[in-house]
Structures are given as C-alpha cells and as structure tokens.
Length: 292
Image (cartoon, rainbow, N blue to C red):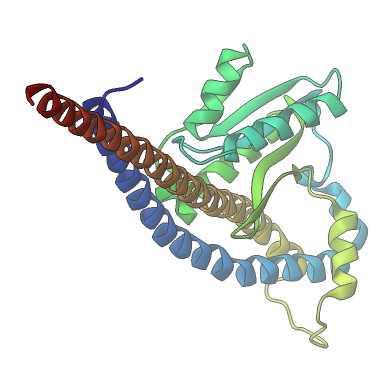
C-alpha cells in the first residue's frame, strides 16, 4: 500500500493536472464561441452564392454541360480533401474522421484515391498506412484559417481536376451541428452537379426580370470559383469549430475525472493518516501501561 508521502504527492500531481485541463477547457470554450460565430456568419454568404448559381444555372440550362467543371474528369482516380486537426487532446474528433474515411473507402472498393490533407493528424494517419498524400497544407494553421487560404485550396483542387488525372474531387470534413453534435461528412466538390443547381433554382427566390451585365454566362463563369471557395471555407470553419467543441467536452471530462480521482485519493490518505494516528496512540497507551 502507498505511504502517506506517496499519497500526498499523487494528490498534488492530480491537482496540477486538474488545473491544466480546467484552463484548457476555458480556452477551448472561448475559441469555440469565436469560431462558431465565424461559421454561422459565413453561412448566409454561402447560401446567397449558391442561390445566385442556381438562378443563373436555370437561365443557362443545357449550356452548363459544355463547361469542364461540370463534367467528370478524364482520369480514373479520386482526389480527396481530408480535413483533420493539427493537435490532439480533442477527444474522439480525429477518430471519427478516420472512421468515416475507412467507411467511405469500404463503400467504394477499388477506388484509387490521392489525398490533399489539411491537419497534421490526418497526414500522420495516412502516411502510417502507406497512403499517398499529394499535398499537405500546413500554412496557415487551421486555427488561423482565412478566406485566402480557402481560395488557394480551391484553386489547387480545380487545377488538379483540370489536369485530367482525376475523375472527381470530394471533401471529407466534420459538419458542426451543435456544441454536442458534429458529424463527419463526405461531399462532392467537383464536378459540380448541374442537376443539383437546377433543382435548387426551383426553391430560390425569384426577383422578376433581371438585366444582367455583361451576360449570364460570363457572370456564371466568374461565380463558379467563388462557389468552390465558399464550399471549402465553410468546410474548414465547421471542422475547426467541431474540433474545439470536441476539445472542450474532452477537457471538461478530464477535469471531472481528475476531481474524482483526487477525492478518492484524499479519502485513502485520510484513512491511512487516521490509522497511523490510532496506531501511535495505541503504542503510547501500551508503553505507559507497561511502565506502571
């Protein structure tokens, strides 16, 4: 059995860990609130871009089929943008993303996949399994992500798709639904599905007769890159928000577990200390009785 000194040291160590996890929980809560506000604020812009795309797609009709980004690529491979975290201590966040990847690969047997990775944890996971990572996007860190980084990522994906090597480009990220629910999802990025845009046009708000300058086709072609950028930007923001939501829950659970362990150790310490005091009293009483 541990001595009183050992128990005292363990209580102190657990208390220090509890302070650290509590501080990390507070930091995660603050950052979660900030990133959640950014994610929510970006959604109206993304919805408006998609609505404009839908209305213009309805005007263009069959002309969409002539655009390269609306047709499957010439290659047979798939390019997957894999979004994970740069750091650990975020509970099951990365494990859920990895599980979703393996499930997607299982559902598409024989699919040859190359990876664009955002997040060092995803890069480590793929390289340990011998999977080819075409590019690791390390700068800026996901925590410092901005729209310009999403623009570069969208451009890289579009250029890879246009090279003729890939048939499609998909994104695996974690969709943020609430502070306690975040679900990994795989969404198609390229080719853009014209049917989905034309279907969305039916629900888009009609503004009556519009005068388009210079013309619908030119505006549509300029809007396509913005559409891809907003798709990727929202995916990165929601993944980041989900990461900090998971880290907050994980650190809260760790803090509560440390508190329970500390209380249990204190009970053992107090019982051990009381036993030692009782034993010393008995020794004193026994010695005094022997002197009589």
